[in-house]
Each structure stands twice: as structure tokens, then as C-alpha cells.
Length: 634
Image 1 (cartoon, rainbow, N blue to C red):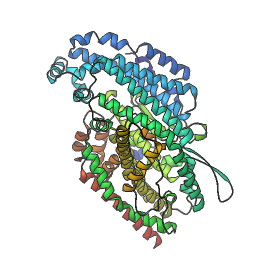
Image 2 (cartoon, rainbow, N blue to C red; image 1 turned 120 degrees about the vertical axis):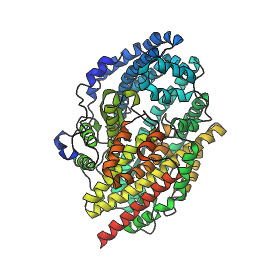
Image 3 (tube, rainbow, N blue to C red; image 1 turned 180 degrees about the horizontal axis):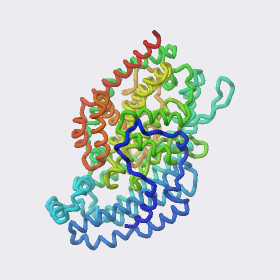
Image 4 (tube, rainbow, N blue to C red; image 1 turned 60 degrees about the vertical axis):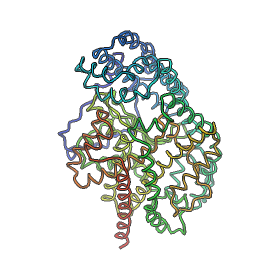
């Protein structure tokens, strides 16, 4: 409807995937790899983007005017027409948001895009309010009415999974009326604004720890990017300790301000959830994810019980580094002769591409389209406001490659990050080419599976193709990433949940309260083989995910890693059969529920066995590292 012209103009250059092509015949031309975003394919400039905003703002009530009177006598055909109109408007709105968010990510201090992102968030809220009549009515319909609507309009059948996922299953968790829906939309807007403000503070304050003097006498500025750069590459243990200490004490100082923000967010989270008849935001997230709290409790319990599976790895690292005991600032150093060795982005991208050689040809095609189309912004620029995070933003509405946001410094871990985000990008592209836009999505943990799976592919490629010294370093880093993904990400969610409970009980929580809570929970997950400080580093102030509008985001990383490791085992056993199932799984989007998809394509269920199996594979990777090291020594 509203967005037809703009969307058609933006999709002209896109060519569909040809699944008949073979990866071996595809070639990634290094000269065509791009390293910066050129967002003009979305909008020519900020003036054009503002014009699109003005247009969408003017037409935000059109669907209300057209369909509100008709919903008094709702038929299947009316509902079909409403869904299509809503989908077209939402496409245009999502493209506008992708542009505003991308520009804000490049510089959180750009006043125009600060305000523009806020305006787009407000527009989203106003659109939700204008069309709350449909949300209220559709979530309250009895099954008999749904059966009538489907019978009246055969074309409505293709939207059955969408209607089930978005409306029918929420009959007990719905706004009471339009006034209530408008109130909820305003709460959601508050949360979006809080998230934007938190990210600005994280970028400008929390991640800027100040200067240290290195052992060579040089001054070194410690920010998010430089912090990990030094810990990964600097062999001088004193320098690493200075760098760690600088941020360690800085985080304690920043925790009070971020604690105020998090307390506000927590209360809004739970308030929003309780308005929809959930006990709290945690129950709401579980319901929306097709999970129950006992499944996540089971995962956390397994990860706590089996934290000792990493002990042999930590002992390997300690011996390799020649230290008496491992300190927190020893955990990131790359275990190679030249830990500062860097790979330029083009060569790294080619390596990631080569790691896809045994995957379905659609993977290689998606990768090439993404890295050669000004869709990846590669290098850090934190001194000029670029956010320190990495992400992939889908453009399924345009059937185009995703926008990939990196902070690439050339280190080994940065290659894994490319693989991770390109896994997302490939998934988005497969869905965009295969599905109606309305089905391009999934639960958070589902969306993380292709990214973590891509990391496993890259890991196998690295072990097989790198020299032994580098292969050992890559594998060691990867195993530590398991620890940073499974125990740590589960720990972050447990921290969030208990912080919400603390704030709910007391009405507030100070930064000191949250630091103490973090310390207590971390102790349950952390290895006894590491000499942590008496108070564990309070990482929570800089974790962007805890400020997201989507609550309890990080358990999804742990859950997806467990699923990925089970899938990777299947892939190693039979790549050809796995590829058929995997492409179908990714291309299904939300046409099936998450449990149905896992069961249909892979026979998996989310239970204790899945988590135990995942940790078994971690142990195998640790054994692989030990074997590789022994072979090298021999």
C-alpha cells in the first residue's frame, strides 16, 4: 500500500539465489569486497529519509480509517486485506528504522540521527496505537470465529501460522481495550528511548576507562576496542594487568549511573509484562520464546555442574603461558608466537567464505552478495562515536543482503566475529528470498543458531588450514569463547532475572547492590582454576543486551550454542543430508513454531540431554586442542 513505490525502487538490483550453482564454481573477487556502508541504496541522503518519514507519518492512520469500520463486521476477506496493508506499511517502517539505527550506530553523537531515530521510534509507537483496534479484537476472538474466518477466505490460509503466532496464542495475554493498548505502546516507547540512551552512555562513558602508562613508557587509552586488543596481543603481563585494572575500577565507578538506568528499565519491563497478565517480564519472554522457565533452569544447572569441563583447558592455557596461576587478564591472550599478528579484512573474508565450501551453494552466494554490496561496515571508530558492538540487521523487506556492523581489528577473534555475523546475514538472506516478509524472523535463540554454526565451520577450516602454532591459538580462543557463550551468557540472564526480582522487592537497586549480585552469581559459574580478584569484575554496566527492549536476551546465546553443537555433530556425520535439512530449517522462518522445526528437521528437543550433549562436544574440542598441541610438540 503506502510503501509500494519505495520498496519496488529499492529491490531492482537484487538477483534471486540460484540453488543449482555449485560453491566450487563460485569465486569471491577480492577487488569487489567493500568495507564501508553506502546506505544510499536505502535513501539517497538524510533529506530523502526525512521525506519518507514525513510520508509514513502522514499515512500512519490510513489503515485505521480504512479497516476500523470494517472490523465491526469482520470477514475473512477483510482480515486478509488488513494483513496485507499492515505488512506493506510495516515493511517501509522497518526499512526506515534500519537506516536510522545504522546511522546512529556509526556515531551515537550525531544530533540529527539521535533525533531521527527517536522520531522513528515514536512513529512506530503511534502506528501501533492507531491500529490497536485490530490487536485488541483479534486477540480476543474465540476459536469458532477463527474457523469461520478461515472458511470464508481460502487465501487467508497462508497466514494461518502468522495469525496463530501473533494473535491466537495470546488470548490470555492481550490488551483489555484500545486505551490499554495505547498505554502499552507508550511504555514500549519509553523502553526504546531508555535503550538508545543506555547505548550512548555505554559508548561515551562506560567503555572509556582512561589512560595507562605501558611498561615502555607510552600512554595507552583504554576503551572497549583497545582493551581487548591489548589483552589479546600484549605479552607483557604487567601491561595486561594495568589495562585490566584500569577498566576494573572504572566499571565500579560507572555502576551507580548505569544502575539507575537499569532499575528504571527493570520496573518498566515487569510493569509492561504484568499489564498483559504475566507474572513478570521473565515469564513473558519464556512464553514468547515457546519455552518454559524449567528448561532454562535445567540449562543453567547443567552449565554450573559441568563448569569443570573447562578445567583441562585452563590448565593447558596456564602451562602454555608459563604462569603459576591464571589471572583474569591472562584469559584473552592469543596463544601464538606472534599474538599481535593481524589479517587484513579482505583475506579474512575470503577465509570465512572458504569455510562454507561444504555447505549448500546458497550459503556461498549469500556471502558474496553481502560482502560485495557496501553492506558491511568493517572498522572501529569509537573515538568518533561508533558503537563498540557487532550486529546484523536484516533487510528482508527489500530482499537485499543484511547490514553487517563490525569493529574489525584483524585479530583471530575478529575472524570468528565475521563468521558469526555473516551467519546471521546468510540466514536473513535465505529467509528473505524464500518467504513472505511476514514470516522472516524467529525467536532470538533460533536466530543465533546460524551465527554460532558459522563459527564452528570457520573453526574446522582454521584447524585444517592454518600452521600448527596458529591453529592451536585459534582453537584455544574458540574454546574460551564456549566459556564466554554458554556459562557466561546464561549467567548474565540469571543476573537479570534476580536483579528484576531484587528491584521488584525493594523498589530500586543501587549500582553497589547490582555489583554484589553480579559477584555472587558469577562465583557459581566461574572456574576455580582462575585467580579472580576478591570482587569479580562487574561487567554488567557495559553489556548492551541487558538494556535491550527484548528482555533476557543473552540466555539465547547459550541455548543456541547448545543447539548448534548438536547440529554440528550431525553435519560432520553426513554433510549432504544435513545440508538439505539445514537449508529447509533456516528457510522455514516463522511458518512453524520453534519446537516443531527442531523436531521435524533434526529430531531435537530442548531438554537436559541437549545441554549434556553440548558439553560433551566442548570436552571433545578440549581433547582436540590437547592432541594438536602434543602433535606439534612431538
